Picture 1 (tube, rainbow, N blue to C red):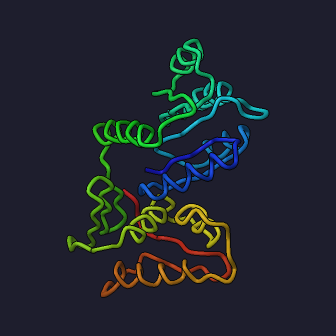
Picture 2: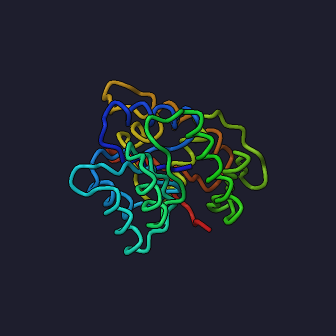
Length: 225
């Protein structure tokens, strides 16, 4: 899933982002409530992990604004506010689940899987662009009805490009969302994986999908259905 993590505690946010990435998710992190709300409104996510005690715009404010903006992304609250009144308030305001800090990591992953299964049951877990189909449930990719075998990292990279289809994503954005790493101008890890992915996705096709935009980044071009 594509997950937005809004958590102001830097070390915890880094730990969670790394763990979610290792579990196969795409993660974007915000350490500020107002910025997190802005990101939630400008992009599409499958799940928001939300702390309540945030500087400036707190978690309750974010929940209120999400609903007023007609953003119905599932929200899982992760908070040190353990009193039952806070749990009830968060759930009544639209959160789908509430987990108390400190939490067990495997329990959090299990709760995320429950939410993921519910999403799969109410929506087709596929991204279709031109003649390519990405099945998010089985993690299978086909093009022109021919299966394409990808590594785990290639799949996450392709999913990130597909979710941002027809938009240019920079090398920096890819590093942050696929590898959860700060931009390293000396690293060619993105170029290497794009090259390998392009060979598998576009090989033998008269209609290449992955485009390099010089000086800006990469874009997966095609009609999304």
